[in-house]
Length: 186
Image 1 (cartoon, rainbow, N blue to C red):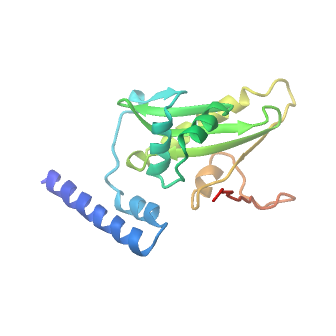
Image 2: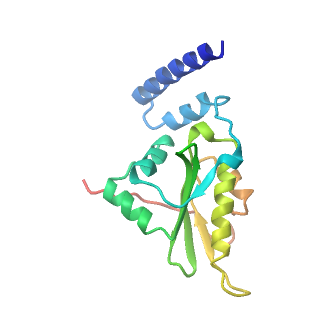
């Protein structure tokens, strides 16, 4: 019985994804998240390895799993090499989550590419990743009273998740809203 439900779900998912790509370009990540509720792969967290290296192919596969922009191989390689810190979750030989830290190495740090593959979401893995990154960032403090600024741009709808981990929603006080711009050579 279970296998038939799974097959039906896969067929339905494929149909809905195709429909949304055709009629609502850019919304497939919302549909993917909605359809896979209840189908997440359960695992023993002790079987997850924290590793610090990834191929550009696996990096782009993780990005693709959450509908992030795919990077050309050379740009992906450069991004990974120039990261101050990077952590990846590996389960059964597959990369299922990640985050990177970029910055000046002195005062400003930016957490980016926080990804948990949709098949493994809602199991505390995002929290595991961010807590690992924050532990590394705390290790960058050199003496009492030392301060660093840690920034990130939350994916839409994930602000509450980051708030529970100590991040403040912007704007507040004298801090304006975060902003971004994508530059592309056509």
